[in-house]
Image (cartoon, rainbow over all chains, first blue to last red):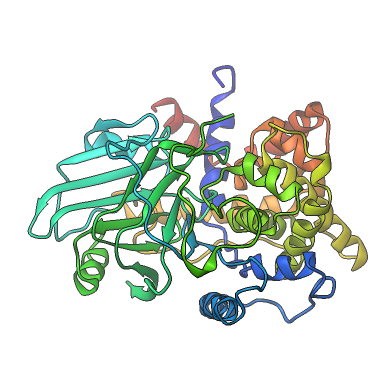
Amino acid sequence: MADQPGWQGHVEAELRTVGRTLEVPPPGDLTEAVRQRLEGRAPSRRRGPALSPVRGRLAWRVALVVVVALLAVVIAVPQGRAAIAHVFRFAGVEIHQEPGPVRHPGSNASLPGQRTMSLERARHHVSFPILVPAVFGQPRDVVVSGGGRVVSLIYPRTRYGLVRLDEFAGHLDQPVFEKFVHLGGVTEVRVNGTRGLWIKGPQELIYITRDGSMAAASARLTTGNTLIWGTRQVAVRLEGSLSRTVAVAIADSAR
Amino acid sequence: MPPLLRENPSPVGGVFRCVCPGPVRSAIDDAEAVARARGGDLDAYAVLVARYTLRAHRAAFLLGAGEDADDVVQEAFVKAFRHLSRFRVGEPFGPWLLRIVTNETRNLNRSRRRRAALALRLGAAEPDGEASSDSPVDDVLAAERRAGLLATVNALPDNERQVLVCRYFLELSEAETAQVLAWPLGSVKSRTSRALNRLRGLMVPGEQSRISHG
């Protein structure tokens, strides 16, 4: 890079910025469609009307309905096909819904390459804007991990106890976290006029590296409840012993 | 191979245990998902589909599939599954899949005899979006410059446009771009450099001095 003329680095940086603000409609949920094709239950390539942004939002609701329908079928017909684990993605978080007890990974989890630094320094280490909830103000700890892929804001002693925010460019990248959610614990909420996902109760959370492998050392059980939401440039997961109303208020205050 | 969560293989209990041997376990990485999908495990493949849908869709959309991106990606996932035997163990799944997505996008554009280039557009700015500078005038100028840059990218010859999409909009490395577009690495380098040169003229003259001041 050092031998590049200055103008070239500048054009490249501008192109990356343009790339992050491009209008790209949300994808539909393809897991079920692909499965049906592979099982020979659906004809080749569906040709429906174009997916508008509005339909994109609806598709999300449909995805949740599909989850419920799928499981209902399996409950009714236990000898049916083995498709019991449903997986979907939301704002950079891959969510697995599966029956059974919560698994307990070890404590002392850490993200790869994590470094504690000031908020100001962190802003220079990540490619997305860092949102800070105005209701809490400056976090006590700011941790940048995965070579600038994730920033975590940690508030150890709020009136709600420990509160943690993990922020990342979830719109662009492959899922950053893998999370195991138990059925019925997931609801859609509105955060600042955009979609959010409210997940009740603890889940197993694992960090997925850029090359698609799981960082085993990152596996941990989340505390309290989780709210996930995303904007065009940054995705956030907020975690703590918060009620849904409080969590949404904290998220709404993030600037 | 990176470590898996082998220390914690607790099976999924309850009435949902499947008939297949071994516990159902979703905490798998790409390599294991591919290995299991090769054996016909559609649950394992569903993990890959969920994990890569967004990237694949973004690639298809930006490389010219436009509103048909969902169809293209669905087709690509079906083909990828059927061709998993050709996937080399240890190679990253993402670029391998994106190459199939690119092929499907090209097939689509051939079949409808449309020039691949659909104009890409900037999304509406969000209040929490970019860290804005102190001066609203600078923000307006920056927005205009980016709009101009994108208009020029839209007007580039297909090859150059595609290489810019891969390198800067999908943020792939040169090697990944070569794989995804099925070009030699040298072509990726030369076409990138040619395209960047065409964009050079767009930078306003004052920009040069600003860069040199850091």
